[in-house]
Amino acid sequence: MIPTISLGAGALAAHKAPLLALALDDTTELTDQVRELDSALAGAISRATGNRDFRGARDETLLLSGAASGPRMVLLIGMGAVSDRGGSLRRAAAIAARHASKLGVADMTWHGGALNEREVEAAALGLAAGAWEYTETRTQPPENERRTPLGSVTIAAESSPAAARGLANGHALAEGHSLARRLAMMPGNLCTPDYLAETAGEIAGRHGMKVTVWGRTEMQEEGMGSFLAVAQGTPQDPKLIVLEYNGARNGGAPIALVGKGLCFDSGGISIKPPQNMELMKFDMCGAAGVLGAFEAIGRMKLEVNVVGVIGATTNMPSGTAFKPGDVVRSHLGKYIEVVNTDAEGRMVLADLLSYVRRFNPVVTIDAATLTGAVVIALGHTATGVFSNDDALTAEVIDAGKRAGEPGWPLPLWDEYKELIKSDVADMKNAGGRAAGSTSAAMFLKEFTEGMQWIHLDIAGTAYSETDLVALPKGPTGVPVGTFVEFVRGRAS
Image 1 (cartoon, rainbow, N blue to C red):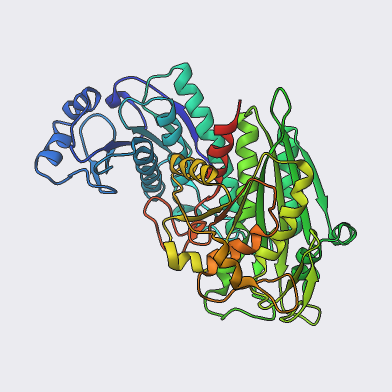
Image 2: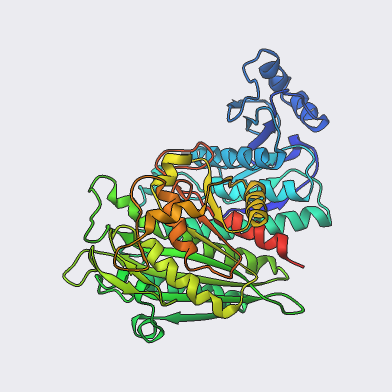
């Protein structure tokens, strides 16, 4: 549930919310507004900074309470040495909302100084992200033990047309992130291919988009042998989901967003170790990213055409499952030798990348929790970025930077093609441990000839197994922000 976020000017001491959060950098210099508040608090803030009880370090917090006048509680939040003000404000806002939720306050005021349009957007997105919780499959505690959820936040800033646009865009992005995180957090028995298709239909209905959903029968008729090989071990009907958003005034080729939607990945016959296998419910974060991006794009009414293509299924071991040594024919007509059934996401994406050609996209971006190897290479900080176009790589990495979703380019040289050579087919679906994320991207590249294409390996960034301070452990919303920022950058 996203809190209601609004703009409100005036003296900080006059805000009636029980909690006032202040974002300060490591200089701990107080604005005129904060100095007025400090006077109302009998100098409590200036004493805390002067005594170095609060130094403004990144993520540092100090809660002040018990003042005779002004807000009941004041939370100081450190931003550290600020180089990216929007990113720092977003993070400080998320931390503020998380603290408000822990304190059980229903209303909060947040102040980060004078804000431009983009900074209002960043603050709104951070506040919504920090307040987000997934409670649908958890029994609520007794009423007398429940914390009041954060229901409304006032950003203490002057209202203007630019600020109003920033707030609206922040809310749109927050709705997209929230939707993606919710889908990712849902257990695999609830977030099924059918459920993803239903969600796409709801997005289309809200925003006047076109949605198309195919099942196993339609995909068989289309010749999607690579995708269907992955799906043949599960009784659940796989789904090819297509969303079309037509926002450009003068028509034009669409941007294509493609997402891997493995609602659960056991590894199939090449079964994964049992430890942490429950995290494989997150193997649909690419698909969640596409759906979240379309929710945000629809709310922002961007003047651009976008098509989203999702392949949703589960990878399960059974008597009908595909197995190592099988050879299947892809939608593009190329033959694939299966050497590892746990390299299934690239097989789904291969047919999606072939299918999306019918829309003649100006550019295609796919996102997938594709390889553990990218986590070894980049950890959980950066998304792996692979492309056949250097300028496109720079454009996407810049979009990710603006969204607070950093990416890093990895090589896609012809020499790596040797890793996926097969003795019996056009290629094999895995190239071994060495350069594992690159060999997976090389496999995808085989289905992108003639396309401007980029691949995002989000296995290390789509979810976290630890608390991230600004966000709890679990789904992060990546790659919603990168998708939306890229599309926004291409909008007329």
